[in-house]
Image (cartoon, rainbow, N blue to C red; front, side):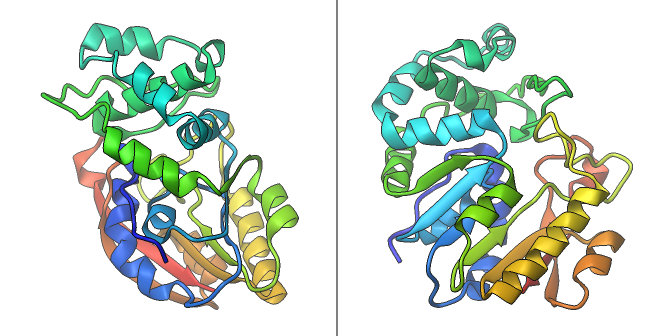
Length: 267
């Protein structure tokens, strides 16, 4: 395993806290590392596997990682122009990332992530980023060292945009290690972990995911899955080895729901 690197997205912090739970349960040997809900990539950047497929259904996020991987200097140049100003934040948020060139779009994603409230990534049903300004005094908008290290870590990785079922059907094979970090099952009236893409991830989706875990396990893959400690999660994964631990939620805007319990499933 190569030296770990720092994730480049602020909202990877929640998973970084979980690494002490995740890393001891990663198999010692495996073929390809596959992470189809890539998000902040905390486990990937900690492991830096030699062979990996990372994917997400969010095209904006996939563009970010592809640009950091292939054109990190262009991303840094674009990102260096940003300042921690509220008017600039809302003007930038109003832009459609698809109208920008890929490096500019990646820089926009990073700027919003570093300066938005609580490091949250949330979109409305039309796919528009809708998190308010964070009002931080001096956020690190352009961490060149972290971006260059991430670029090196991603250099030989296959980065795919697609639905997780399609990605797993195409890439997963016996002996691979699959890490699944889906949108969590909500655990309170305030929690909404589904608005990561314009398409919602509901109960039926979680049931399909549980069926896919069963298929992967029967195929001979090693699987780790994280989710909230919700009754549905226990129903779907109660037959597997699982661990419950306290966690701090970075993505909730309500103080009463920032702490909770997560479940780690080992299949």
